[in-house]
Image 1 (tube, rainbow, N blue to C red):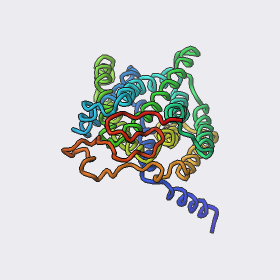
Image 2: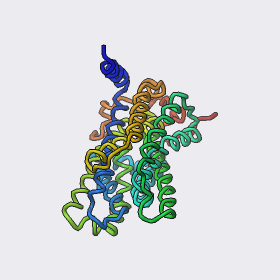
Image 3: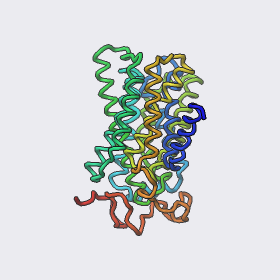
Image 4: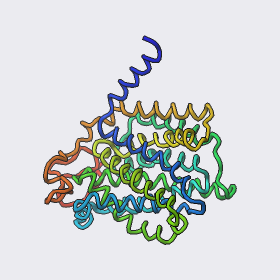
Length: 357
């Protein structure tokens, strides 16, 4: 057997270890990786605030409509508790910080810090809020991915158009975006972990966020929405990477912790870099391709992590009529048995509380 055949066989064995939830997260990361290239096609003069508000605002409306009564019941019932409102706030802040960071600090640096920092922030939140301990395997794979993302982010990186001060502001906004991304992921996982369907959860979070983002788009989006090309860019960002991507990500959170899901989504910068090379003709040097290889290796190793096995994060059967989004019964009904996550509670009338040490 040749070396290439051995490598291909090794890849297939690693890929076979991933469960459906992990593949859903990876699918979301691939779709999100197209946003940077798509955003560069926006008409000249389009503000980063408008692009971010369009992406998440239009996507939020589509996700809320798609979730139907399930999302509305989750909002009006109060079952989501503070996690629902905190998560929605993170959804509002994330695109505004993320797209502005790319405008100020450059696309490469903005994406690397925003996406690369999210797994670390998510892990810290889970550790402080829920007492979850992370494995050495997880830490090693995240470090590997961060090295790869750093190689991608530093090769040929620009610092935006505003000089050093603008670059510093952009980096700070990217850190804020990483915190918002992690905060949304932890909040969504907490709501799903207490019996809500992933579809209703994502629809509720983004539906609430769209109440803020759509007005922002109306105020800042004159240049973006003044041409057919701008409308197509806004429509693509909202309906494809955001709507479909976050449905896949929400599905993945049913069987994957927030810290693990954000680690898997580190594939996004690698996808963005490849598309930039193929479509935008931004040629990658050898260090860039090495960074991509490290990110892909990290993702493959993450799918073999013991901390991601479905048995540790089992969710209720979503085929049950009481849990389907279109059911007459509330899709957010809580379990009768306590979930296995360390922060869960067996109460059927309260929101999650941290586990006692």
